Length: 249
Length: 217
Image (cartoon, rainbow over all chains, first blue to last red; front, side):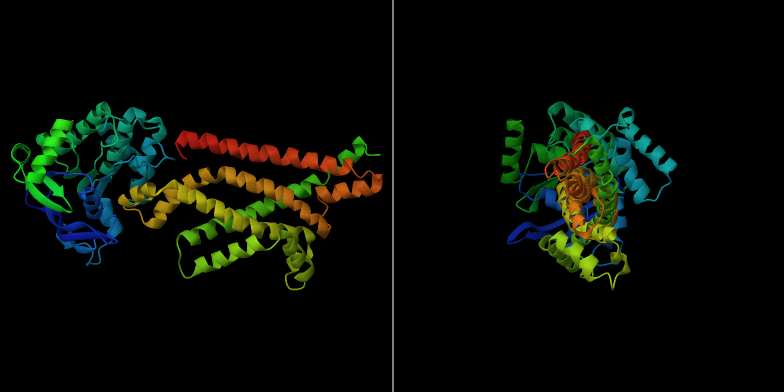
């Protein structure tokens, strides 16, 4: 499985907000080209884990490794690392004063210091990959939720990151809009983009995930290939969660 | 008797009223943005300076500043020998404090997820601020800036006390010359409204239009 090179990993990751331990020790790794899906009840710490792996918040304890290097104890430039870790948020987080094209271009211009022409070409290329080249000049407020999320994916993808993290990218979308976003994500997975995805879209997980991680109460309590974990969960908590997710959907 | 000619005479005060208002607004803009930024990014203790500045400007009447500058400090600061400049600077300093509050409110309204999204692309906090937060904050701030301009136009009338030949001073001159105690001031009041209303209204409407285009709250 995988090509052996671990891109992102955590050891003994813990996070505390006030008196509350949201993450209670997570060991995780993902190799180049893999897609891993995290599922679990709300409040289990999935989003917090993802934000910490995206270097958007520091952990309280434990280590994060990017391409084998300890992120917080070496003198790596965190901003440059963040540029290599794409992030797609749950709520629409497009820059509202910029068009779809402007959204995708901004990081290329400001962070990667691309020339205007080059940035424009690259931005249009990724907008095409998410099938939004005709919407390049529209502002976020003029786009549907699904289109906004696809621009968000394009914005992350444009930076040519080593991995993209998705935090429930379809949670705030209607069902038809969910599909268009999921289709784009499946396509990325097939093209070999490394992805760590928090989602409850089990169809997506079944089709493209190399591994599903089940989180509960700040821990990964079960993991395995999709057909195994979805069909035959070992833990009681996973069984309950899955039957409720499938039954209630 | 107050005649139409007196009204035209009175209009000669308008250029100075506008000059004081817009120059002090520009000065306030130049002071307000850095003050807001320093408050947002506390560094080198500059945020305490900003705090003190805002508190002083909130607590001291602008007329007292004008008098202090022109009559009290002209010996130390030659600029303040000019009544016009004393009035402009007094209003400008106060406006800087007020505008910094307007900008701060606007920046905070832009929201954490915009900052987070920018940082996730690898931007420094400053780059995120400069390219993502500030442009949106400026749009949100437009109606507030409109009210601030209106306030400056009205308060430029305090310059009358220093003898600056602006609209209020002219109306007082006309009052003395015509011995009409009502119409010169009424005319001034109407002119003030005719100036302030369109400006504040324009910025208000531009603000709402841009906000709805960009989906800002």
